[in-house]
Length: 281
Image (cartoon, rainbow, N blue to C red):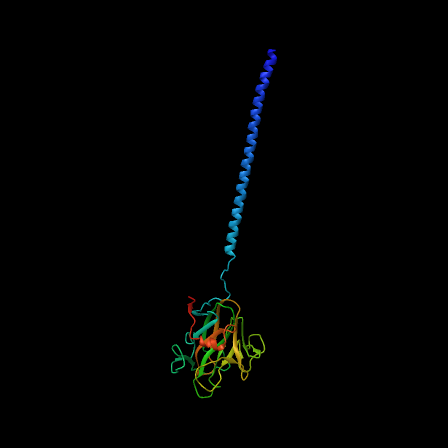
């Protein structure tokens, strides 16, 4: 009887100890699982945040870098900014080589006056008596070119009426008639070429008429007049070059305007809004 009682007491005590141990083990296991779950969730959240941060950085780097293919040349000074498809510049606003002179003996010019070539004629020698203009294009496209010029000797409008023009880093430079006929300067690698003088990417640009007032006109190809166009395919700074051809050809100013945005007359009426100047330095 005593032995049976002790066995029962022992068994009951062992049962309590075993149950308590089992309970502790169960709680410990659940607690570890809970901790593991929390750690896993935190790790997942950190990975999500890091991925979002990386995506944000990539988004900032994927923006427009502002890089353009045409920038200021090393010898560049000032440039003239196109705005809303229009460039208007006083021709005297450049540095001139050779025998160019600034004169102000005409009533129908603006600014300080006009520039006139007083040196020898360069009828087949483009590149002599240079003037360079830098044009900042903000609105890519095809522009028509005009300048306001006059012959300043004699009364024959077919003499002393032209100078050379070139856009060496433009996408395209050509003459076009209203019937669709197109000519390209000799040396550009494109055909057909204009009647009369042309060389090394230069067009001879002339004006017509015996009235020697300053006239908005720019044409190429002798006896087959083509208006002048230049294409800028992207934003950037482009070079426009003028060189002497006929002596006593006077130039007051020039104009570039987008052919799809303005008529010739509209552009001329807006020409008094001169382009802002910027500095390459």
